[in-house]
Length: 359
View 1: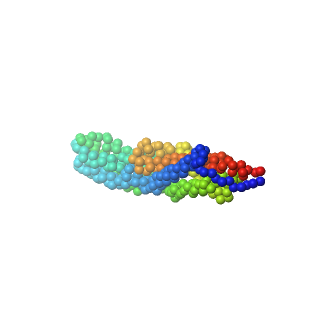
View 2: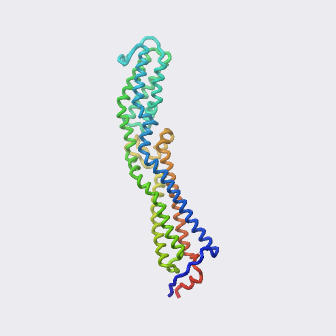
């Protein structure tokens, strides 16, 4: 039997060869597009992932106002004392300060409400939240509810002093409690920002950044395939050379590495996306909500916090999944093209092919 080497024909001498060569050029274009998509997606995710702990801290400190909670409590306390002074009373007269006549304490009331608008209202809302309202944060929410009820119980522009003084006494003592318990509230916030799930995200940051290299595994694979395509574009049993076969083997191995890693990423991404409502966050929040429930709740009720902490992160994860879905499709197209080259042998001349058939 003769196993002579077949000579590779021209790349564009016939219509089938022209079509095959155009498809080959298209493969390189797909590899370029896939490389760019992966780089952009990984880059879009690594920033928000690296910033997640700091963004969480800033979200609670700035958006929810925990960084201003102690100062605002002091201001509310001072304004309440000034309001009692208008009716010739002071906090030492609490809890039953009494008072004679009516008084206008609108400026002091406005100062107290400014403290609520600055931070205390956000703290109150979070303390009453079905998921965030735990431990000292829940206690702070309840106390702020009581203080707000006192403020809404009378007209500050013309209130009886015995009524307004009693309300301001309760506001004063509530503000004092909040100031004293600020450290306990911040401990609760630390539970959120230092949760196990957040640390796990951080631990995977290096792996995410490593995905920048994955497209280049496919680029090297395609370089080996290009050598095979230029040299033979045919297997050994159909007239190909040993060098061409070696290049083809390296192409297949590196393609397989790219395919396996990409499939794992796509599989994990799809499972997380489709099963997010079944993955619970345990031991951190009230009621142990699922990831999807919590994210939907934050997006719907705390838009500013969502924009700072989660919006870019979620967009990055979505883009990463979509990019690797596209990358997976490109890998399958490369596989199909390679199979077509090996089975159809468009670049092997018919005469050469007949010559190398076993006699």
